[in-house]
Length: 533
Ligand SMILES: Cc1cc2nc3c(=O)[nH]c(=O)nc-3n(C[C@H](O)[C@H](O)[C@H](O)COP(=O)(O)OP(=O)(O)OC[C@H]3O[C@@H](n4cnc5c(N)ncnc54)[C@H](O)[C@@H]3O)c2cc1C
Image 1 (cartoon, protein in one colour):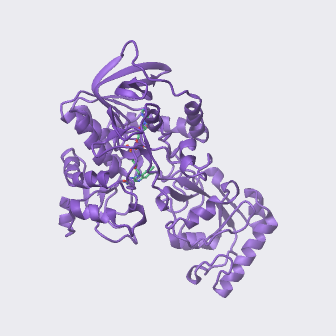
Image 2 (cartoon, helix red, strand yellow):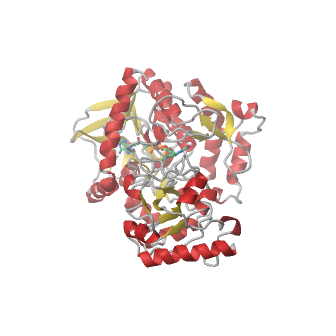
């Protein structure tokens, strides 16, 4: 690792540590700040502090491609990022990129694909997530996939030769793995022959942006969009907070919002699902605060909102022994949880029992993440207090390590007796003992009359001390609602007209139930090209 990179990592780590310390209150603080702010009429300021042709807000998988594309189309670009590092959720993710249309690697693997086939697949009504895709956005997305894959390779993003196959997912294979084998922030995905990570997307694009002259300003938080009149006229620029001061930045051609989702904003997210209460951590926190500030800024100047499509499995993740979603072992962002990858396989989840605040089971633990009935049951439990309970024999069977730093210090306990364990986790001892006793009788019978766990999973008694309890957190992972846009990534107002000078893509925009980076990269690139005109 170069000295420069090492320094950068230190910065990132110190940021992360600070952020981690305050994470419990982070979403709340962001929410309070946003909710106490008045939606002011947005006239131009007396004086602009900075100027560019195109201002991009956010440096994640949406903002960086938008900035590079705008610069390649002749624009002078300013990129504003509120974090002290670039990348957003893109730099900490596993680097599985669902992109297709007939890529070089699909061909190499003998997989036939085209823009039309992608469109057909993504419109298939039998797949629940497809039903409410906006066909115009979908068409633009599919048509731009292949050229965007080539464009990424042209900018130094490297992919593994093999495509990733999600267990149980059939159809045309499009999951490309972004290679990344360097030390760094990313969560390195372990399934390919070599590691993959979103860092392998972000760092080459950051380099490309700098090479094209994009001015990247970190620790610059956009607080407001500035439009000519009250909900009328062009968007002229942005108000920015930096070091407690306000700056005004003028965009001669356009502002692009690549500010990510609202999944960490309690108010916005409870609008579409009231179960997403404050205690639920949004994945990517504390590195990224997905407070929906870009979406709110758009609404303040008259943009329309597209409701969330994320009604099913990808809205949530369940994690054991961590509040956060998949970070490297020992990371101050949070341990990866129980098991090597931080998330247990279905077989493993099925082999423990999950109890609520009353020390009682409430669900068939063998329910898969999809459909969402596991989450429906879990979110209905009081205060979302959910403990996985198991014994030493299960630990040995699966090779789990339910001890810090593999699990977070205050989220895993063990005791020689069930009663002792109950005391440690604050659930009634008699009821936890009765729950375990009753479950053990099911093992003998090979059936679960309470919740219908299939016979093949009711195989092991919980009887070998020490006994363990590990916290299970439900995390808000993928929301797909956001600002209304057209196929040019222009933001639409409440009457359906394009707001001149305003663009949005990725998780700040709605209309597609497509999760992950591809939506941002492809439609962000389109935004950059159009904003530069
Ligand atoms: C742990 C994890 C694993 C994942 N794994 C994958 C995967 O393997 N494959 C995949 O395709 N997807 C994955 N995802 C999802 C993927 O990372 C997101 O879909 C993607 O990052 C969204 O890109 P975005 O640019 O729209 O938003 P973000 O990545 O959230 O970026 C938004 C950026 O805008 C900045 N910002 C926000 N508001 C402001 C403001 N007001 N002023 C200035 N800056 C602002 C933020 O700080 C952030 O840097 C994963 C997500 C997580 C959290």
